[in-house]
Length: 375
View 1 (cartoon, one colour):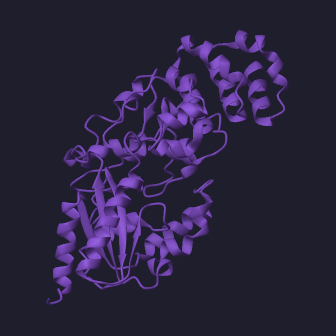
View 2 (cartoon, one colour):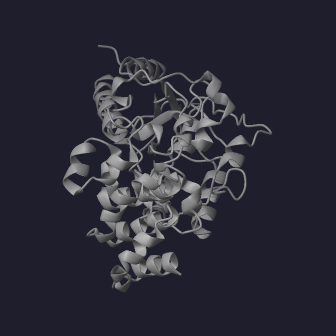
View 3 (cartoon, one colour):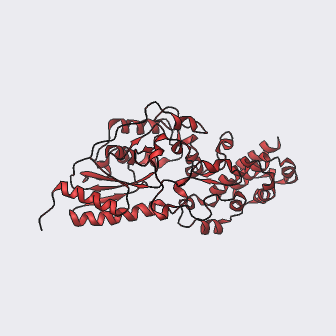
């Protein structure tokens, strides 16, 4: 059998990727533009990464693909469309419901993307035998700059990827190849003078275009941050209990977006508009059962309840007070503290006073919440 030319290999990989359900395919050289490395260094130096120490821990590999895998000669960048069928911001006014980011309403995309990547990698190995590596976003890969170099989209002013074909809604994965293939033409920046994504952010997490301070980002606060969320930011979170889509959803390029074709990415039962009262009743076993196979499971019940209680405190619905009261004695200090805050926000001062014995709480964070609520 005659060996395929590099051009034929590239065409075959693209065709197979699309057949397997990927929506975008691009090829890039295993290198990043100097500004991408500079932006990462600045991001870390300013402390914008917050608790995400893993970003700093492997910064060298992240900013230089060959440091991650010296044998890499080209990168295949794959995109999977997860566009919502409905307006992702519609639930923000439904204060009795929790608003879950579009990407987390279905099956955990890490598993889905990795499965497709492995199938594609198997096919690539048959086409052109040689070493290769498969990555999703848990690896130290600067996938958005690579996606821009591969022509899939560009990093917008909100630092997320924007596609002329799919708007804001692409999951990314990469296959590092040990064979050299011609790179595609990089995508240009098409943001122009628009700043909708910057202006819509409830917590003002963008100190400048193309810069983000994760410590103020609702996605970071509700997912990555493990401790207490600063009191001044809580009212701004509204009913967002896992992630935030605001800056993605307002992008004008979404006029070209389309609903995801992959069934597994559709909303799971109970995640389209989950009732806060229902979520607040979850113990650890119920939380694990409800969110099995979901990315939400990885933050654990206590952090999730922290988010739910903040949303309850922002709901203005005093009918939720009796249920929140039970959480004043929860086993988690993180949950107890946010229960105090939620009761106080809902006007339950008398309820707090009747339970004032808890003000002697040994946990300093919980004690501070009681003191602030009863001051």
